[in-house]
Image 1 (cartoon, rainbow over the protein chains, first blue to last red):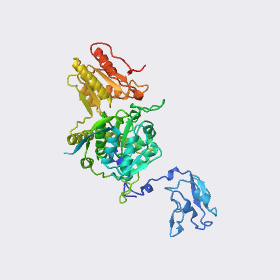
Image 2: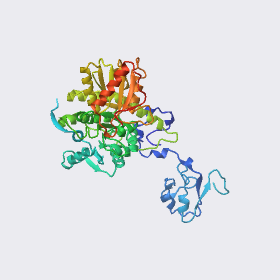
Image 3: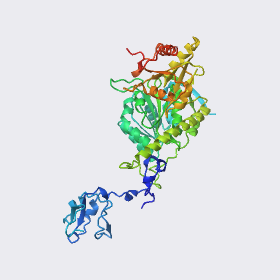
Image 4: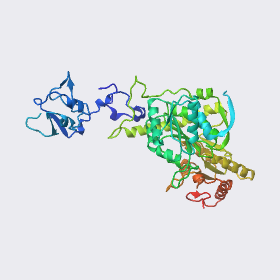
Length: 111
Length: 395
């Protein structure tokens, strides 16, 4: 959560909003959950993955979690609050370790 | 008291002088007749080192206002000038400037819009921008153009307002004619406009903000527009306060509306800009002939002084509203619509008639103004009022 608390924004009066629609706090887009735009979800095959981090470089939403130069383990690999399912990671993966699966589908062996 | 010197010069040259005295940080501009000499003279002041401004010669008015928006969001005091097609090309940024609450000040040399091509005076350009959320001041003379320009800075930058201000003068008639003007000394103007303390400046690195955000998809767009409405409503008191302070300093009157011979007037003309001079002249002649003629000049068009106008017209039998702009398909011109609306709640509504005049710089002869007063006297004595705009003097 950033410094600017917008959790009850839906109840704000016009006078409570910042002048000229500025966002008075850097980096607060993190609080705006946009993963609901997604129709396809990336799924990683940890056995094929070489941890080259090309997916992390290419992800336009910074939605691939990396710590100590290693991808976060499933199910934390992808930040699904912000991943919009564009599939760039799957497309760029040199060893085809990422598959895009439809949201809402249960696939055998896929979590 | 300030030192004032009287000079004989054009409206544009004194607007350029006012720009220099207001010490803007950034002036992005593009030349267009009849505004060109404002930015030309200002560019000369920059070249001579007489003002320390970043002068940005852009490639179009769309870019000019875009650069104004960017510079103002960065925290600069920003001024520019335009006219006619230039103002039309700024259309989308005019809304962005007011929506982002940026106190930009822009001079506009009022000029007709194409087609057919015409470079002369009318109010089609500015009246087309009347709903863009800018405060709008109008000058009758070069003196008022100078005074309005200086007043625009503290109005725009007032913490209660923070809206852009357009200061409008009639193309050629006021911009290019030699007129008698009193100029104030630099120190007095500088003290009057004060130092600009921006809010939400992008260059304030200790307090980073994002400008130009998205407020759709159920977001608070509606609430932001409401704040904008409240701000322009508040600006009325600020325009009056700044006007009174400037009046005190300069010794020259200022009002949202200015009245002449209205105390016992039976017939009156409501007008904006340089034509007020013609109307005053004719009204004085008619007074000598025993006609109780009067004049109401609107100097502040946004926010519109409804209550003041209604009070000025109380007791008048017939009113003519002169519009130097069309609102095609409407009941009449923009000033007529506002005036009719202002009078709707009046206890005794006078007859109100509309004249569209002087489009594309068409001559506003004194005989034409006299014919308007003759029509009003007829209406005041029982002749039915005309409906729909009369094209004054058009063939």
